[in-house]
Amino acid sequence: MYSVLTNNQPNYQKLLLANQDDVAGEPHPDDVWLFTDPTAKANYSRRGMLEHLEWDIRNFVMYNGRWSSDELQFWREAHRLLRSGVLTPKNSFGHLSPHPTIYSAEYEGAIVIGGMVFNFDVGDEIVFEPWLSRLSHPGLAGPLRIGRLDTVSKCFLSHEAYPQCKKYGDKDFVILHQILYCPK
Image (tube, rainbow, N blue to C red):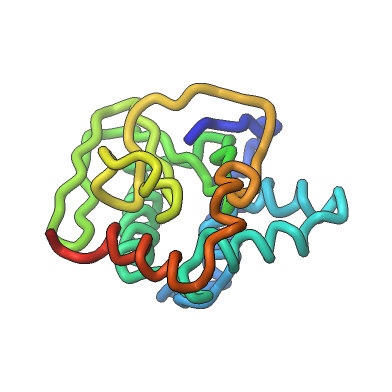
């Protein structure tokens, strides 16, 4: 995942939290916009491409129109750390749909997902990583990437980044998803 910088907005954290408060505490597994940064969504809307982004998220980012339990747990953990001040939004989002907000660690900490602990240090960047992208990077153990992200200027929809997936059928996606989620 690469970082796409946004215009520096002084109230970015408030905007992000206000947008996430619409979820009313618990994330909804079928909320297509759950991981989309508000600035990225506004950019697509301004260009008249919001329907394309929604289609891409539903068909290539979510699985069967839903977020998985580990993805929802990442959302809970990230927002817990955001509200406590351990993480802050970095005024950037991921270059790949759903274009998630990138967080910067203000303090050392950990994110726990499915019993796995993902530690981070001060200054690390933390971003949601969609399941299809994780398949392409087998070293990623969970729905997140921690480290320093390079900056790019172009955004991609997942079906553009992984064009081979357009020729996959439903059974192929089931197999790919099982590879990622079935215990070894």
